[in-house]
Image (cartoon, rainbow, N blue to C red):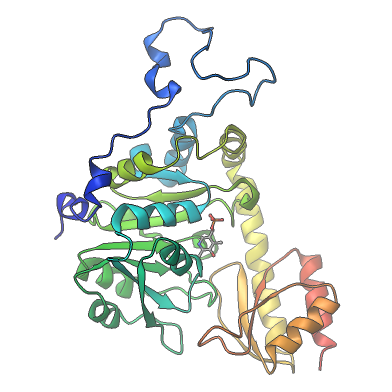
Amino acid sequence: MKTITQVLALARPSLLSLKPYSSARDEFDQSASGIGNLVFLDANENPYASPHNRYPDPHQRELKNVLSSIKGRPAEEIFIGNGSDEAIDLILRAFCAPGYHSVVIPSPTYGMYSVSAAINEVLVKPVFLSEKFDLDPATVLDTVDDRTRIVFLCTPNNPTGNNLSRDALMRVVKGFNGLVVVDEAYIDFTSFPSLLSELEDYPNLIVLQTLSKAWGLAGLRLGMAFAHRDIISLLDKIKPPYNISSYAQQTAIEVLKKSSEKEKRVSEILAERARVAQALSGMKSVQKVYPSEANFILVRVSDAPRAYNYLVRAGIVVRDRSQVRLCEQCLRITIGTAIENDLLLKALAAYE
Ligand SMILES: *Cc1c(COP(=O)(O)O)cnc(C)c1O
């Protein structure tokens, strides 16, 4: 068993001892004053043009409380980033020294982990998923070395759509002494249980989720990291103070309160996913429809670039993943509305 002290010892020492930027709103604690209507002359804001003239809450307290009740984790175990992308970048910066440490990333998976690693000059050690896109934990554990700080895993995986097995995931979490980041961006589209419930026992586990997919808020840019509170404190310490705008915080709080609408949209997408998969598998032009636990389907066709260009001319944009190893001749198709999916199916039915 690893302890949080052992895990935190892997963070960059200069960041552990860093004194963070203290904003005007940090230095004044509103609850310390008994007065309701305060005059704020501390942050060089413009007194006009309410409501967005004020700096947002740098600690996103209200939003964290709402997320806490939805996710069943204490607010202190939640980091909110400007998209999951910001969380990925900050985790890399918190634990990896440029030009020295490495990370392990399976392939094929979401491209941001390796791009973010490259930006931070962190070496990427690749491992490959099997033909069926399964993860072999022994290969991951053989690939990590003394300088490996993070393993990135994504389940359901993008662009393949399958879940990595819980057993494989937990073997990596248990067997690796560094951090294991499990990206659950598509968790609402699968019946696979979240790893959030494992956070209690594994201080080296970080779970990523996002409001960009099931919650329909990709434009707001809100991603979450869940982990031991000491890891969250470290990420909060090194983030830009006002990384989440007041508009994003307020809008997210309103949308999160309407979770039944999210549920309804998710079940529509799931029904459409089944319908689209069924229709695609009956088509001459489609060689394989991979099973999906996400809001997209990976399909293999005979000539993916040709099919892609054909669809673009028909006004439909999908993702050509044929350059990705193990995804040769594959298109990744997002599940849209029933009308959009019909347009896709109609166009593909007319494609030879
Ligand atoms: C879409 C997606 C995200 C979401 O990223 P945001 O920056 O939160 O929009 C994260 N991880 C994976 C694997 C994704 O496919």
